[in-house]
Length: 210
Image 1 (cartoon, rainbow, N blue to C red):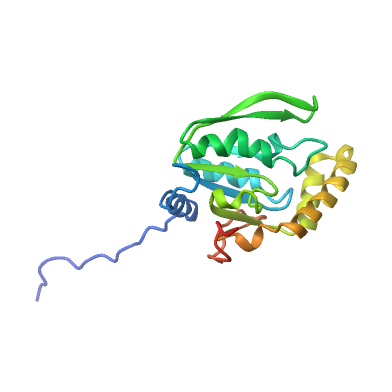
Image 2 (cartoon, rainbow, N blue to C red):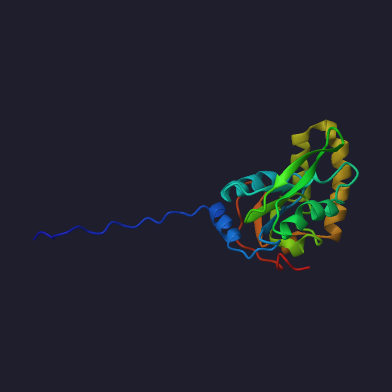
């Protein structure tokens, strides 16, 4: 006996890219700095922050990225909060486009300017991006999971032996910073620093807690 019609074919569910999902999640957050959702990408130097921030910015259709290396200097590794506040946070909080002076690590002076449009999402990437003084303006803290020793080894391999002395000084300053003002406990999103894979949600304290 013939059976009329056709059997339904099994459904295949498309896998949603975790980065696309994170971008959608960030867009849906309440604004935290004027009309902007300010997102910190923090972690040890050499943990992959800049690379991940670039990928995330692309997933956010070209979201602006503030690089904290542009605001730090040879003599002020972590004393950039005033520059960030005055040149970036205050204009964005007022709904205006921002611009900040960029430090040239070769010339040892601020030499150029970078624009930061008041976009729906703006990323701030760098060691200490999720620090206490910045958190009240943040919608989310993203932490790169790579321990300090492994991150430093990667950074030294990248930069070469001529910067070994710089890395030694930096490592001491970074350790002191995170001992006094840790960011990781406030990260609602964590990323594997080796693979760049977004880890299952591990929500610590609120990203905007003081």
